[in-house]
Length: 186
Ligand SMILES: Cc1cc2nc3c(=O)[nH]c(=O)nc-3n(C[C@H](O)[C@H](O)[C@H](O)COP(=O)(O)O)c2cc1C
Image (tube, rainbow, N blue to C red; front, side, top):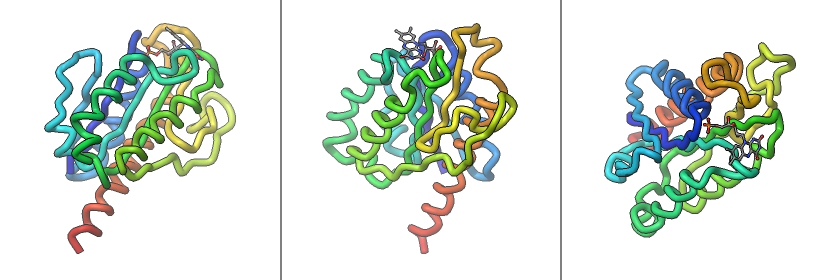
């Protein structure tokens, strides 16, 4: 089982979140993960087509996904949407922003809508909102993993609970994908 993480990160916070998602995926036996930062260019379209799941991540810029992730989305129209190359793959999303709210939900809605347009199957976060900074899902979202950077250095934010929440999403996607593949074989 191969799971891809495609993300953008201008200053390193979303990159940290992406690494946490990858750590969560690796907790599940047989799960292989590869990360692609859209800023690197040379999108590995073939590898994405071969993946069983794709998790998309973006910083929230101006209340939506970054221009870098949007560029990737638009480029996927010809390479993946037209041939329906991602149809029935599992999908999920994560985002982080400076403010606690910061209009992050709109980024996740944008990503989920994008996944739906590709015929993908969305996996949300099955987690009650936590109270306090130590708690998992302290930001309190269900559509995907959210984190707050508080406009601090990526060395100290997102904080541990946000990274653990991201890891939990990665693990959940790996579990759901395992079940999905098993069901398809049966
Ligand atoms: C162009 C730009 C727009 C931003 N817009 C928002 C916003 O709408 N809401 C918010 O809470 N933070 C906003 N921020 C702050 C970023 O979301 C925050 O610094 C985030 O952690 C950056 O992630 P990155 O290091 O992965 O790029 C913005 C930052 C930039 C550079």
